[in-house]
Length: 320
Image (tube, rainbow, N blue to C red; front, top):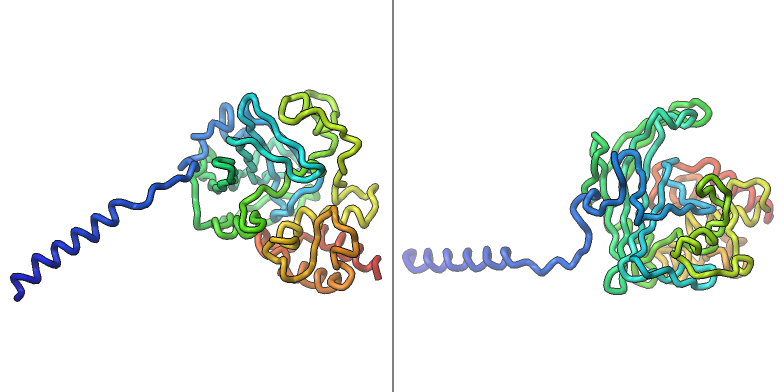
């Protein structure tokens, strides 16, 4: 009997191994290292964009444990974004969005250098978005694609000369999808036209960013006056309610909206909604409590954004 079973076991093992040797084809367009995209010219740590990549800035940004961010977009030659009101534009096939997170060693003197933590890449292919996270090496020469997330301790000096420290978290792939999904579809969050509608410095001159992107061939000619301009959340010259709504739009609305991760809560925080449709009034105190306890946003931060919390608290207190 043993003489019969042994050959059968060998055959079964070989079959199992052969199945392992033939995995399903990987259709991912994500490359194993960041340098393969040729995003930066010269020394990668200098973060000088290659000519195919255009920088863009947001009026109000997502808080990420006080990390600085560089945002770039690459649109295939001969194509441009298609406006969709003041919402997220339609991006052509082959578009690449790049966001790099870093800390200046000393914010009082940025020439002292920085530490780059991660670069997130979103690529539109086959009418869908794929997202990858790249962790920079200690030498700051390249970054490697990771899927399981990572944690790194980082220290820096803020603008007030105070020493700061945080255990910076690079999110895993599942966490990225929980924020970037809408009705089961992976989507960008930040570059809505209303959040791009701001003044930026280009070639030594102050220009409207939408106008600049239009002249650069990334957007068609626009009636900029007809597009909402999201205020900067920390611009104290803007009305408190508008600043708070802008902050909640960028930091919370990707989950607190129809089809978002927190849709069942009933709280809706998109900027275009009327105040009544947001249900902020009946949820305001609970929202402040959760932010203060570090329970919201659900992911993406490890510390409470003191300035953002103060803004939300002032807004909610004003309502009452």
